[in-house]
Length: 313
Figure 1 (cartoon, helix red, strand yellow):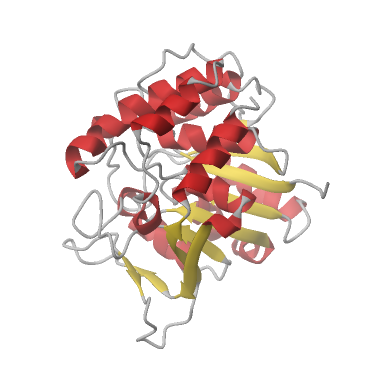
Figure 2: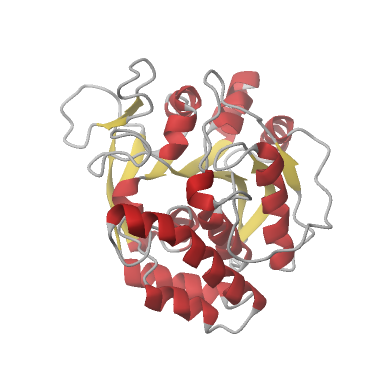
């Protein structure tokens, strides 16, 4: 088997973030060298704790978790308790984590690790607002050329936004950070709402996690049942979109996704469209192509992968 791909997951858990972390932990092809937490779905003191709860749920207290930015670069923090519940991980009753939070600041960890490890060997997997990644790039611009790839969940174009008519939550929370990342020159793969809204946790799919009969399977089913209530009410669907695991699924099985290479620019000045990802899908501008934007997903294949890998934990 080839060497596992080294990844750092930057996250604001969130039930869908939790499932993404579990998917990575259940996959031998990936080596999580660290998890960095950021404020987003809920404030930082909860997101870093939730990341540790998930590692312990998976029986992996050895994973190092670092706390990062407490708020966006410029704007006030916007959170999403109405979707994720007061803790960010409402649904299962997960115990307080025993594993320690690392003392190092997540941004320093990112800079130090990317400068130390061989260039082109680390993939960043941001599942929340891009504040930590942008801060690391601003602090040490040389890291940009050392990152293998950034595979992120964020943005939307054909689907519009989910927090404003034009903006997806992760990008909206810190549009200035997203702007820094999309202009960094690092190869980017983007999982927008256009893809994630096609990955619905139907009742049958949620039940498949429960049927695993494991602690992880049960907790996942409980998380999804809580998390999907909000979206079912909003979109009138059976189940809600499972956003963040698309990032990890792409690393494992890129053939599940289809998209195209194009320019993505982030709106940072208009209050009406703040945080909109303006995607030049049809190539109508001369702006350089800076991201591979996914638009389609084999949703049955995606859920089969999730159940199989979470079943290993």
